[in-house]
Length: 230
Image (cartoon, rainbow, N blue to C red; front, top):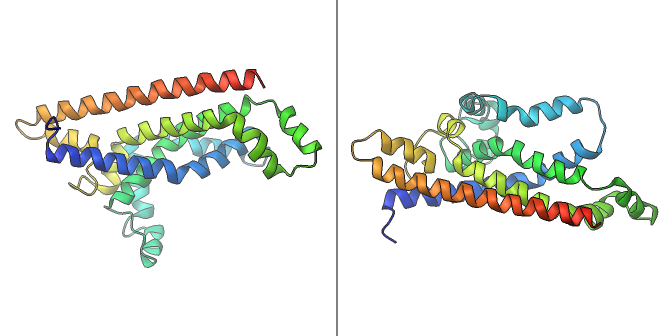
């Protein structure tokens, strides 16, 4: 296991930690948002949809700067959270927050498409049998869209692994604390002789991204088969 050096393994381990936390923490909100956009009609729905997808359109540096203004040490939310011991600025937790924000649109879109593919009549049938809306969601909708939920989580994880612009703007590039794989690649390319380490981390990134895409496609096909046979 000498293929990667100590600094490179540190960046890989931190990226995995950040991406896992970013995905796990945003999954419940992502599923709720996807269901709301797919099934509910409410005032301001298009505004909510626009806000959800805004990180895909804005330059990542802008998103990172907005996070810094809001959750940084001098930001309004950052100061309030610091009083209860939650700190995002220049910490790995901030890197996880930035990754979650940037990955959230991909997660929501994958889940929303899978929910919209489910015939609402199946949910209505459960309701006519006396089941409450939450129970209908748990027993009818969720099993049908589970592969789509997993696909969204996989895409979000892959996006979080590759997040750079918002992360470096929000929490800088601190070795062992906020230096994820993309930040490490950038740092290695700034020093003479660092091309080899950068190339190895690029290979890791490509492998993770391709694996995530293949897994997402496989899960998407499962969604189609499951809904088609429902």
